[in-house]
Amino acid sequence: MYQKSGDTTEIVRLVNGDFDILSHKINNLFPNERQAFYYVPPKCEGPSQKVSKGKLPDFYRNKLDECRQIGLVQKKRKRIDDIDDILESNINLTTKRVCKTHLQWLQYNTAPWSSVEEHWNKSRELRHILIAEHKVNIYDIFSEYPVLKQELGYTLLENDYNSLINKKSNIYSKWPELSKKLETLLTKRVMKDKTFAKRLEEIQLYEEGD
Image (cartoon, rainbow, N blue to C red; front, top):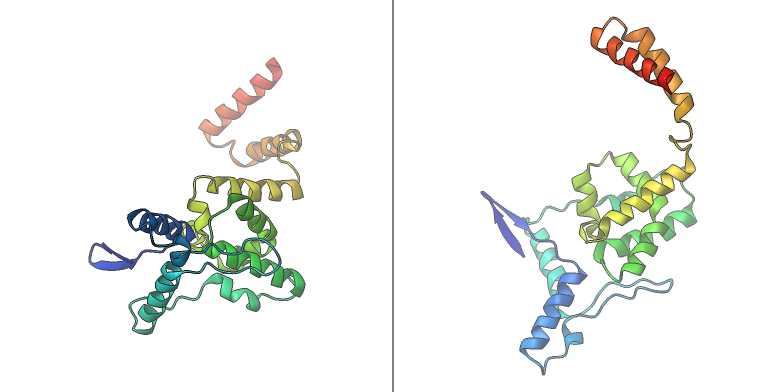
């Protein structure tokens, strides 16, 4: 549950994938022990989402609570707990409630992947608001959502990016117009710099050659 890092002791965060692996190993070592006794996956479908159960996740969560009580683990408030503080003007209450359910699922689950994608996509609006309002960095985001550390985690970020691009003007379709404006800006502001002036001249000669 803990690992040493220099002079400090850091908690090792476990997710359902870890409990699944451990329960399989216990079953392999002790065939008479039922895997379901140690780990039961969370309910992934339907309107009511449930967290995982079994001796392993229950023990882990209980120990985590004990460590928080005695001060070994900082009682850090998660950004997901700040959802209710978001102004209602940013997102309606129904959407907020639905997104919060999906976000809670993502905090404790990394499989099955089809469910991960579903919860990720359906929580997109609220995630973007949380990130924007709390000015978080990349480390915070990856710590908040363990699914991003999975093999296909990068595809979730690609989906977010594509969603944002589709809602805004595509830079490639606007490039001819944008390039003209950039050229004008360069001409006005950086012509005093010999290096930039030379590069601009090369660009103009290249365009004339076409």
